Image (cartoon, rainbow, N blue to C red):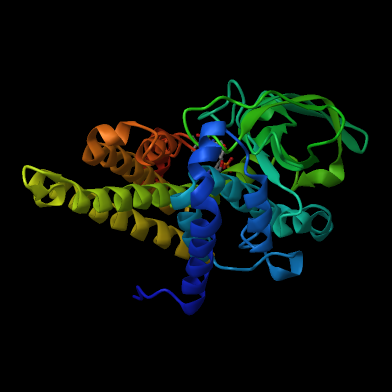
Length: 380
Ligand code: CAA
């Protein structure tokens, strides 16, 4: 067993950390306050090769392994969790299914632009009545000659307001349940696609999401990923990858909360001592660092399994479950360490607290991660 990161991993960390410190962290509080999408940061991430990190070089990606992707996500998300999820969606929810399910023609037409970051992607699975129960899709694609006509509504679509390209799941055979779901790659600026206003959210406010309405949107059968009926597997295997990205985002938030709390606790004095020297605070920080490291080990292991080509549904679920819960606890306790100062926007920990919550919800709630883990135990 090897716990040593490679030189390439260290180089990715250095690049991402330097970019995050120089460009992301200085504006994170402001873009959160204004709920402003950081287009300039997304363009710079594209130049650094951070938007198609695991895509093969042949399709204009950076061809890094999944641990490199996790490391970069941790660093960007520690500075700004909103910027982290913009990056994560393009990498794991859009480039990933195209890398895995698209044929060469589709990769040429759709994947290359996304991997270079010339275009931005979104992933459209959730609906008003299909969140945790992802198979309950109501959006339908009806065959019309060589085309399909698509009608329905998608919800909470991260990157939706900005996306050029979307990976869409919808029903082609409603009678067949989850086996009647198919997946398509769509041009988000095409006729018959309308986007709602951006959602007004508690956290990750600089990352925008919205509803997307399909009103007789016509796609060619050449835009289908895999065969008719493969859509649920496309979605689930994509989420196996996506959950590693969200675990890494949660790790970034947790680490940032820990660093802020540790620095404050070593500086602030009460009752004649630094507050770190009060056992109540010292133990809180000890637990925080221990739990973050445990979550990191689970996340790196899931990433390693993905890079080895092993099935990693359970490991991804464990990583996301643990990392998201650790992030929420770390952010909550960081506010406690800061006391009143933690509750005001002058310090970053209230943002970490608001940003952490979503990691327990999107790409499968903590309850759904437990369903995935329990199902795997039951199959033994
Ligand atoms: N990989 C490949 N195939 C898989 C799979 C996986 N990880 N998981 C399940 N499948 C297959 C099964 O083998 C089964 O195949 P057969 O038809 O051949 O038997 C089929 O899919 C159905 O499996 P289940 O019976 O387990 O399906 P289910 O309907 O009970 O649902 C679930 C399982 C885990 C609850 C699933 O619905 C789920 O993950 N729900 C959560 C959805 C989710 O995470 N949504 C997030 C939205 S995206 C987002 O949040 C993006 C963002 O904003 C950033």
